[in-house]
Image (cartoon, rainbow, N blue to C red; front, side):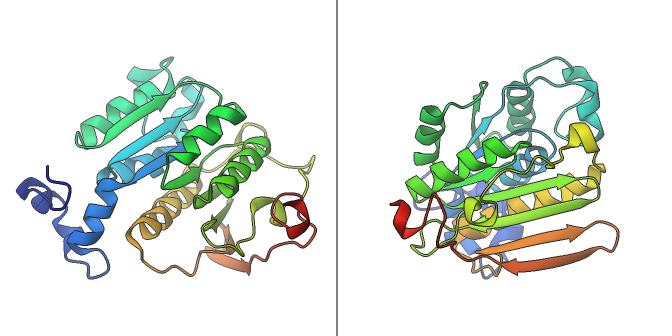
Length: 255
């Protein structure tokens, strides 16, 4: 496939994208040329990776050190019963290759150390935080800020979800620590509080949408905004994020 044009097969496959004025052939080429890092291949990483592969992202790096367990199948829709006990990244790679064999999928079957995380982030055009613990969220955000790589962060627990988009290419961007300066002992996760399956699907799909917009260059009101979704009312609540003057990571005094 030529770097500067789509093949006849691509024109056919992505025809619904090409009909969109905000995407077109130029946007589809940007998707094909993009490299995306997904940290966490659970409930959020499942729809994120499926939609990005289907969209024609050229290179997906998927990182997770876990194996597929029976309790995952309630919400982690990329996996099936036949893959129980398999490493998630290997099982996901097989499914993504079946969905779109043109997409290069590189599995990282390990917990990312700071050094490895920073190396992976530097090679990405966009990073999606689909992890389920606060320490990883801080580490991913710090690495993205350091490398000036956009970050799309999602979370879901119970009947609530959160979405944040940090465009660290912008000098005045707030970071994750501006919003959450310290980890709370009351932070819940799916293992302790449960989650309704469609909640992670909704947030994961939103993450995939924002990643595609960042790559294609479609303006988004979600950049620099914290959004919370109430699964009971079906309503979104939005809060504009601002850099915290005392932030330990991105304030002027911390540089």
